[in-house]
Image 1 (cartoon, helix red, strand yellow):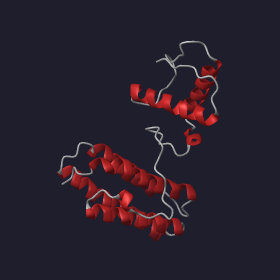
Image 2: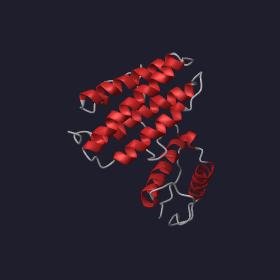
Image 3: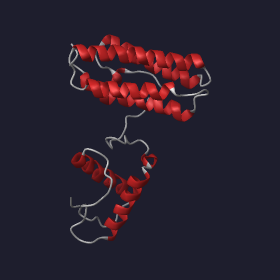
Length: 197
């Protein structure tokens, strides 16, 4: 893979360019690269040396936190968390009972955020999530939805993580739950729109 060297890049442009290249690498390899072997410019370039070092450090350290707001698997910007944290029409999947369950998930996460030391709030979130995931998975299975297995894996990962939380729940955990739900609905759930009738 060849990359044209850029003259001077601002930090934001540099990060955007890194993301573009990483997305290309992920498309080619279908997974995060272990090295940058085979990636070079047509001509030697100081900027390319700096760029490859930045990528090497990012890949080696797996310090993806420096790219807050970026989904690590797809390298796409994540969807913004609504404030106040509640369901709105932009989250509609157009199946009334699933939209209702999504509203309950929003309310459960909001309740936990307001009551971080409440075992009841944590248990409620786990219960509401499990019930919703079961309902959604049954619908997908009945309609032979092509992405059922990956979807179930995402559900299981979320539940496993939340079940491991201890009280009091911290701000990072609340942020994780909010981010996960927003992204999951708008990216993963939106895949089944019009396919489960």
